[in-house]
Length: 219
Length: 297
Image (cartoon, rainbow over all chains, first blue to last red; front, side, top):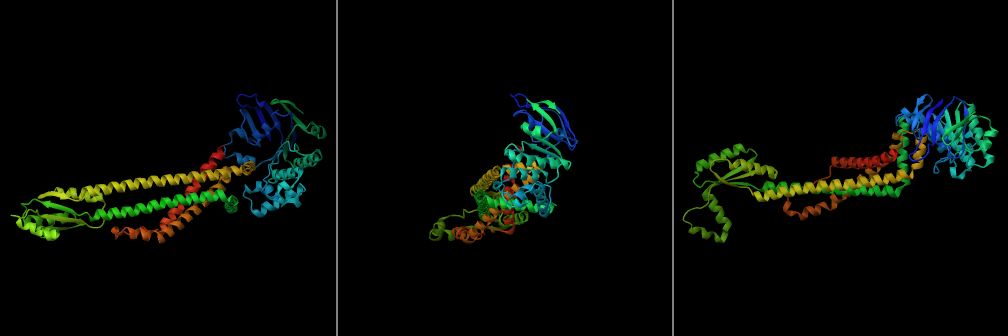
């Protein structure tokens, strides 16, 4: 599903952010991507959804070489990838259901279809009753659940989450992670970047550790 | 699906316009002002051009013949002139007739002519081009007639026509330059307004791109917004021009009494459509510039 071959990412004048990373993630896997701040976790995720380009090496996502994608091809790759961020990235002036339906709008779905699918996804994350609320009226945990609902609404084959619980109280972490485990159970390949070692010890999954841009362990 | 998307994007463009009324109003007013000034220049130029053409048409061409030319030779020459210039009227004025005209023109002073031993005036052929030829056309006709036999001199108010031509050329150049300048200014204002709108909605654009929106999908509402601003600006300019046409132009025409017979240009449907088209294009192109730069970065 995801393959990286000798991938490096450098910015002029700085040490490499990623240094000769080679790894393979199978379809349907759940993977922790861990390491201290600055290890290269977020950069690796950005390369996977084409927000950045590697300096060298090859990346295959869903069998497609992202380095060979044209600018016009990137959106079509992204439609198969859901992304969740630490800061949620919700539109403050749109309601919860509009935020979730946003991913369907670009696919050309009708208004009724968008609403129906967005509500169904909100029901799965337990927020159907907040469908018409604005995001700022929700708690951090609720906002992250909305972000996960948006990432999953068009049923992507890959879900990338960058520190999805980083801004949340510890008590909310488990409920958010459960949504990611549920998505994985339905067949979605999930990659979660976190520096929270407590999560790794509580939930035993494949863990890829990065340090200074290099893969230090994969178990 | 295309209908859904088109409807959604159009709705979004209208909503965006509504949500940021002040910047949109600035764009609309700028486009309206630019188009109003541009169209006023065009109308002014068209009026000046009609005026110049009418003045050019009034300048008749006088062929002064050799004093030794007989009446028969002069009439034969007149026939040649009429044959070579089918779009002109021509009359032969013999020496006696010329003297009679001079007497009439001199009025009380006509007695001074009694002392002349002989008639000093040459016979002439007066050629008046029909229609409203351009000064350049009058000049060409005069040059052709100059080559005919027995024609000693040709007078067609050359200096006057040259000045008219130069004036017409200057007006055209100035009008075109001004039009380009005001439309360019409008384009920049629209581009900057849309750039502000794009910047204000950068989070939305980032999320749109994140969930797989193509550049075209991101760009389209902004282009529609620009085109809408352009159309509204053009509509406003048209309204102002129609008002000026109704209340201001008749007074101008009265002031130019010497230009009687020259009709003030009218705003036709084709002009209105052209103006709306230019307005939409200015808005569209301004938006394109703003969004293209943002998408590149």
